[in-house]
Length: 300
Image (cartoon, rainbow, N blue to C red; front, top):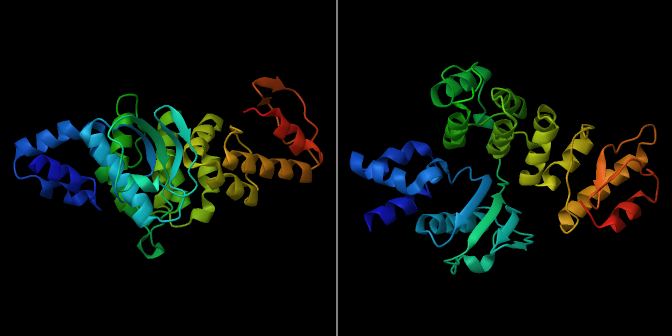
């Protein structure tokens, strides 16, 4: 019973600084560490990330229930649950978590989804560059200028996630942090972790520009293309790699925006190296018929 209570409280912690207060003995600390596994770095105040949860496992089901509650109670109306698959079937949710799961979360089946928080920290608490370097040295890297190496990159991503609720930064500072990681999967993951820790979300296009094409594809797919495309178009920073699934209404809307942009910009070819319906296309007319051609392809 004590372990169950500790787990419930852990998933509700606002700050990681309260973590040690949950444990009375070293044995209790070790036990909950073993039980949580990779969930040890989950933080309720920055839940943005990718989740694969087996609801027949008690700790996974507890985390799922917490993410349902966070979505519906703390971020009501926001599209926080994305790319949802349950029991092998896609669930197209338009507003947060499934509402019937608040009091009746399933107790079996594998749940896969991305949680994307809509919350933004207050600007009055933003770190100075000096404060950020000190924070990274204390909590993520051995020195703020050190890049993640082959062995430590994954550990540093975990530490970044675990300490992220205390980060209040600008998008420019976020790009500095991302650049400290070497490998594409770690850089894209860092961008996702920092998504809801920036005080200037209107400048998230800077994060997009910091990423290479493969990282952009991963970032957009997990954060949600509607959190990317309108911003990069407005900032005239739309160069990048995109991947869309036409079964998703959100994806169709974003493709329409990119088509409109291509048609409006008739001074150059905008779409290159693209695939429609699983087949490479060398050319598509960027004229008024463009959207109809793309829509009728029914592909990725």
